[in-house]
Image 1 (cartoon, rainbow, N blue to C red):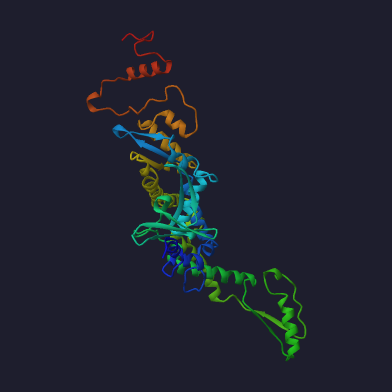
Image 2: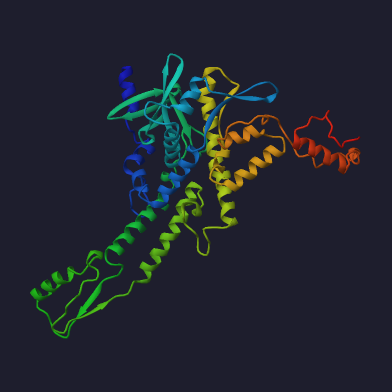
Length: 425
């Protein structure tokens, strides 16, 4: 068998490729519904969980840094990898669009793939690859490769050509897909949505009955059935029905099973949120008796950022360092998302953060102004700190008069060596 035939055999979708079959035809479940990426994205809860997770990560500014002596670090802009991941990933996408798509793929399927385009030994672009069309496998020698199907053509890419983001898993070559392992929950949610849609399509009511004290002929029943069909469905709601020959219409009330189904629809929202670790309040769903505002909601948001968004950022940063930076030989460089950007829309928290950082000597005034997009000011590059606390052995060295004079000198801009006219000390 030739090498081309061996490659073609490896590219075929075999019975062992469960992920490939699941992506194409869906995963089986007791509800009997096809559960795949397309069907799951039609659930509003799944759409919101994936969208908000992808947007929360992609909106964080990404930059590359290099560690220097004394554990100092500087930002690196004139670097090929930094230009690709921070400025222009490829010819078509902005950095926000690229990382949003990668996080969305990883959240939905557990994996995100991009082809590394290189000019010589220089990384020039990252071209996204659909996770539903890419399957990692190991050849007979145990070497990791990627089988990618694009526009009807199959291609086998070596490990060095693919930037692979893995989601949660137990090790191995791929992350676990929430859609595949949550097929029971998603199948039930799809079935509930379908049943609810049919219920609303019938005017949110079960069938009704017509009664009469007379016996109808067969042709009369058929004619009456056609007449009644004009009043069935939500599009015919409100029409006036005229009954004759002693006919009476009795509407059947909504059955307890149908009413419970609508309650199950609320439960399915919380069940789906668990698969992505997104609190229901984040997607606009409040549990019974819970409000949409308050300090409790704020703590839930912080927990989601800490346990959901931050681990995703760490996962992406580690993969960038391993697959994009280390091959260049720059082991001191690393990429990092700026988590402080999450405070951009919270003016109170941002003001408290900047105030604390500048008053405790951790950030200069100009560094704080830069985060507010304000111009630099003269004298703003010095680190400052509060001096209201002093060691015990210095207590009593400063008097109230001296403090007042020092404040007056600072206000008037007088140097320490100069004296005020009434200063006789």
